[in-house]
Length: 78
Image (cartoon, rainbow, N blue to C red; front, side, top):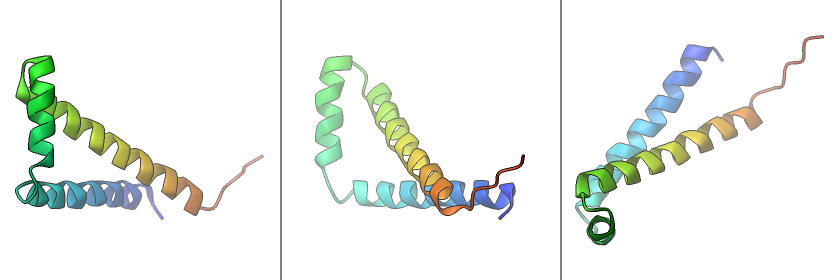
């Protein structure tokens, strides 16, 4: 699998999860309560929301890259 295909796959998975997460956000108010609570601590709801989205997507990208590294055959050149 080429590098472009791998990067596209990682991007696509992140996009789909973010897209579905946004659609499900309207159905549940749990995240709204979390953002409201953290906004009282940090003072700005946009900073809190951006931080939570960044944290979630970074964990997603990390999980995808780790899974890919385990599934790809190891190549050792000596």
